[in-house]
Image 1 (cartoon, rainbow, N blue to C red):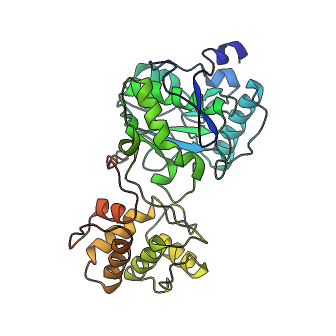
Image 2 (spheres, rainbow, N blue to C red):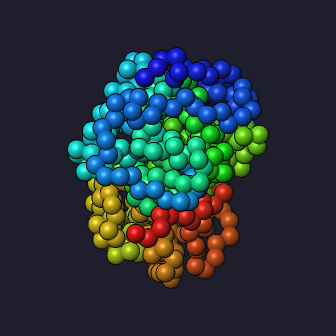
Length: 347
């Protein structure tokens, strides 16, 4: 893997947001192709089965973090080792045919192909290789893993620059609106890609739009998403969730406004009962739509009415007799541009 090749078009035009250096989005008014390192360059194993190719364009980008140490080794050798370890974990431990995500970006800014044929099909712009990075989004979304853990730490400038450049190129090739750059937690009960990186997604959308000669600044870069609730959280969202869990038949969720052990058990019971992929006590993008849909069907239930009252007190506004999913999102404080309801085709 060539250090010179991967460093082509290095980091320029940085500015600071919240103490972190970010790309200004004006250094290059173009969707420049990142210096990808293909699977052969970083020493990938052959896939266990031929990649599944779909003759369609992706419609969004899903941002992940690897939840690995925030290493100070930014070398291409470290990046190649990361790619090999991810592939081995996905194939040997997960039982997948290849690396799950389409691309991996190291903390040093090296951009590596994940699943075989991802670069080839991206360059073509008309087909996509099916990934394994998020159930329901493996065909319609391009998955990008970012090396590190970004729960309470910002990604380094080298990674950020490559992430925005890579997203801009993907958006250009597949004609994706930058507003469709979203996080893993938007679809699953997970903290991925970490609170700090997830909180930077509106800036990422804006910068990618700038590289494409468009703007989605400020409120226009916000997405309608569900909150992520977990142990120790407090506030009206937690109290509303407890009422909605009770309306769904999980009586253990006492309406205290504190995400306590009893609420954790109630969320796990709801996840188990609704067939959630992850039964982990995190109330996120997979379980919220199911819970809100259940609440809409039981709009007359006292606990549903109590949940609405709690949320309206916190964020006043009109509420229909039977709140739909966008209304629940607005009440929960995460209103914004609605997410296109696109999922993988039935298999």
